[in-house]
Amino acid sequence: MALRPVTVMAAVCDECGWTALQAGDDRWGAGYRARRDGWQIPDDSDTAFCPDHWHVKCEQCDRAASGSETRLLKTGWRLLSGRSDKALCPDHAKDWRATWR
Image 1 (spheres, rainbow, N blue to C red):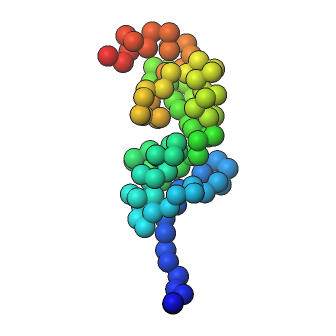
Image 2 (cartoon, rainbow, N blue to C red; image 1 turned 60 degrees about the vertical axis):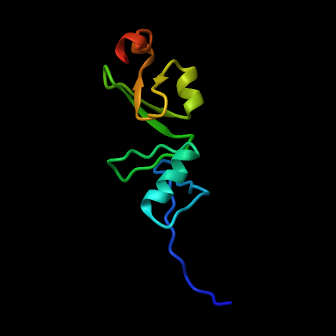
C-alpha cells in the first residue's frame, strides 16, 4: 500500500469556518454534496454558508438577514423552495403568492 497526498475540495463556511463533511474531487462535486446537505452556495460566487448561516435578501426591498433555515422561517421569512438565495422578508411574505407565480 502506498501513501500519497490526495487533493479534495470541500465547502468551508465563510461565517464560522465549519468544513462540510462531504468532499469531492472537483469544485462541482464538492458544491453538489454540500448543497445536498443544506449548505448555501450561490452559483456565481466563491462564497459558502453552512446550514446555520444562510444569507438571504428580500426580492422586494433588499432587506437582508442570516441564520438557519428554521430560524429564518420562524421569524417570518419566505424562502422559495430549492433556491435558498431567493426570499421575501416578513413584510413582503404576506403577499408571496402574488409575487411568485
